[in-house]
Image 1 (cartoon, rainbow over the protein chains, first blue to last red):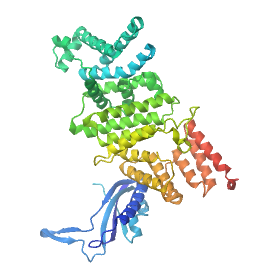
Image 2: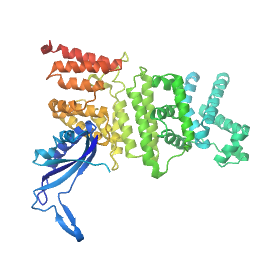
Image 3: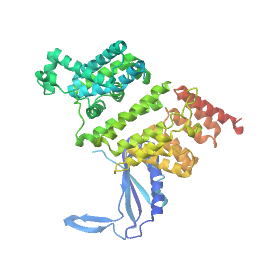
Length: 114
Length: 415
């Protein structure tokens, strides 16, 4: 079994109205049901975390800019780590991720053990 | 209480207390000496009380005799006395003045210290439970053997080996410091949890013994709650869980001693008082930021004290199982989570998820698949029940599966 990082990207919400409590709750259930399904197969390594919609970017010479840029349509919304025998199996696990239903995507990358 | 009943009762309640206090004083390396002294005390009681009748205060009598026997032993055994004297910083002249404190406070402290000693990961969990039953619950070797469905010889060896290991590892009998408390407390709770489960799910047909195991786990858990330094949220959560489960003792067996499944239980037989206690400790457990697996399991058990099949109930249970699995995977949690998924989100979704679990050696896995396919594909359901039957071990489980097969075959479209 190898570890795979799942990176969730969706529409850049930075600067937009935050979701209502009801929307949050519905979304939370979808995420928990999906993660619970992976954990029930004993294939969840780290549930990971959602990320704040905006942050800062540090560049050479201590230049700090706001990020992600407002012109970028997609932003990283969070990550999880799963374990699977192959990249294909990891892709199977990623199917059903709630981010897909709102037009987002999941990038699946094998973690190289150091 | 008649004398014939009193002595076994006192043995159960007092043996462990005196042994704990003496061990606390002597150290783990002299555990056999402590046990010998206390056994000797009870032997003296058996002989004398039979002839002279009961003393006015039997417990005080036992304590006094145990104290005297300890002092005599120390005086007699110079070598031991020297070694002990060094260990416990008493010179041998002072043995006669040696304070053997059998006050309630000292007994409680000693039992707590003993609990932390016994629940040490340097010995296997099986051995921890056996040792806890022997040293902390006053169970005889035969009773422990019955609980584990094995013979006295096996348990005797298991306990002796565990004691040797504790000696070798030079485990001190003491309560852990505040800083090491949290990690050590986890071990203690795991052992209490297993001890309770041993009683609750054990295949031993002797229900009285099984319930005794559960109540002992609860008693030890309560000791942790009574002590300020160990009265943590997760400790309250575990006791809450135990209260909810044990509230169904009466309902889960019929007059013939056969087990009654949850769905068929008479809720009037559920113990309201224990359910209320469960709710009380669940509230106590929420005073902090920790959400342990005991919190989640206690909440699940709480929802099971509501028998009505409401959507709200199953949605809560599903989310609790989701969280539980994120903390710690176990096959039983995976299966229960999928059952809750069927109840909350529908069988179609649950079938797809169940097929991915691949717990192909687990009879309950096939029973779950059969349940999920029962309406849509009865033939497939039947095959799954047959797989479950082949894998099941206990008679009670086989009976349940056979009855499910009968129910399935009664459906008109199958024949």
